[in-house]
Amino acid sequence: MQKTKQLLVTEEGLKKMEEELEYLKTVKRKEVINTIGVARAFGDLSENSEYDEAKNEQAKVEAKIMELEEQLKNAKVVDESDIKTDVANIGNKVKVLNLNLNKEIEYSLVGSTEADPFKNKISDESPIGKVLIGSKKNDTVEYETPKGIFKLKVLEISK
Image (tube, rainbow, N blue to C red; front, side, top):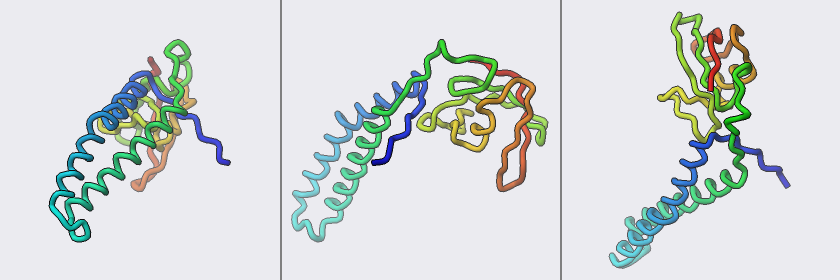
């Protein structure tokens, strides 16, 4: 039997996962059941694309519910009091200087379920997140992209 990996999340990330699960169970599940009922009323199920689509949607919703339940079962909230600012880790904000672009960027290091690159929330499993985890102020780290190797200098680590 495969051991399930512990999922590190922030308090905010845990709350979002719980809210999404609640929404899927109480609202979305009922919507899909109603859609199936309406589609079933259209008649012959063997040639009923609305029914097929509704059943596919139901399968997706149920799969997402199972996924979230499994993630929540294995979630470990990063304790705010455990977040230090001497070494970058999940829960930290890390201000870096991209040495290739000569541009300052601040990233929030989060667990994989909370990642949102458009808001500079990067996962500890992303290429940038992997090299920032464990780094200290004034460290220079490198990560590889299809466009080449990028260097980041850690300017500041905060909560």
